[in-house]
Amino acid sequence: MYRQLARWFQESSQVGPPPTSADTQNAALKVFDLHPLQLARLLEETWFMRTDTNGRPSLALPPELLLDQLESGIQLNGPNDIFPIFPDNETGDVGRRAIWNHLIYAYMIENTRIFEIMGRVLQEYLHGETLEVPSDATQRWLRATEDLFYRDAPSAGVHALTSWVRPDIRASRRNAYFRFFGMDLNHGTPDNRPYPFEKAKAANREFVAILEEFLREIWKGIENSINTSGVNATDDAAIASLAKQLFDMLRVRRRNGNLSREEFVHVTTLSWFHLTVEFDSPLVRDLKAEASSPEERLRKIGERVSLPAHAKSESYFILSETLSRLLIAVELGLFNSPANVRGLYAPPTPATPNALREDVMAIITHWSMATGRDLKAGKVTASPRAIASTNGHRPGAPVPAPVA
Image 1 (cartoon, rainbow, N blue to C red):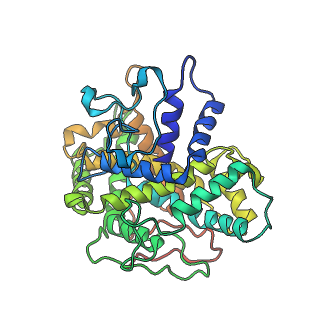
Image 2 (image 1 turned 45 degrees about the horizontal axis):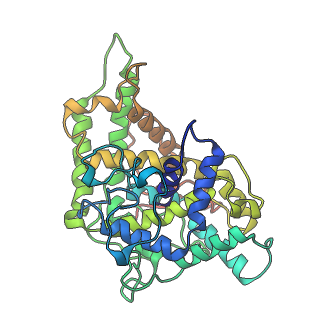
Image 3 (image 1 turned 180 degrees about the vertical axis):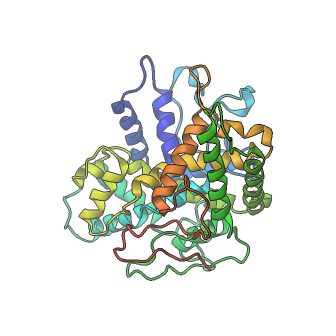
């Protein structure tokens, strides 16, 4: 959500040549400079104006027609006040729209331990002066981060997911991950105990096993896609059958819009922290954590506050968006027919590039790296349902068992 807002700021003001890295960073800084009330109101606008009340939001960003009391004050200041990047419904234009990430995005980003690390950063800054005195820009980031993500949201707000019934937002996120994916996060409490949360009886406990088999079957297609002779083990019917199982599994969790609000809020939350380490933001610079990648910046920040990031953070950052795009396509039922699965593995040509295949290849590689289970090899007998690695942030800790 916040990364999309930064992209909108960039594209709406872009004139002439393609944007530079400085343009991208300046757009992100505009997001961090907004008042917390504006950011919270933008969530209300977005949720209120969604076009599919049973799913994740899909709408112009920011919306053009809003109730007065929901306006955030974030407006387009471009030529003629048009919305060329994310056209609204009234234009009849079906061009590019804001693509709201799947819940798997939040799950993968949170596995880097970024939420706990940033919480420790807040604690160090707000309780003392063990870190360098923050710049004005970092102080604005600290205020917005604390207001939006580390306190109870104002009652009746769309992002107010804590209450007497569910007082712990961390536990609420884990509950949603478990219901969708049958997985817990790869880290527990600060003292290495399992994090307590409600484990729903109705949960997709077989999600990982089916997803991994789905990816293995696609890999067979990739391996055989350029074969001109010999046996071809590609099985389009098997790929479609597994896609249909994932489709049914995920859609049943969304009946009548169930869990959509939770997904929206959790994805939005983790996008804020992802944006923070996506470039050398004011916080990154103040912590002397400049680097060339999100995982390296997070690693350095973790070292500053004595809370190490997960060793496989690079894979989790890559999986967050690639797997999100794939699961959105799966939930749309795009691969439920054998006639439609070839795009998952067909080799690109100069005339027809295949971004979907590139996503799948990245998913197979980095899922294997994050879990230690090689999806390019043959099927294994047992497949743990928790994404974790013995090389994670808890030295010597065993690979977590499937969540009971």
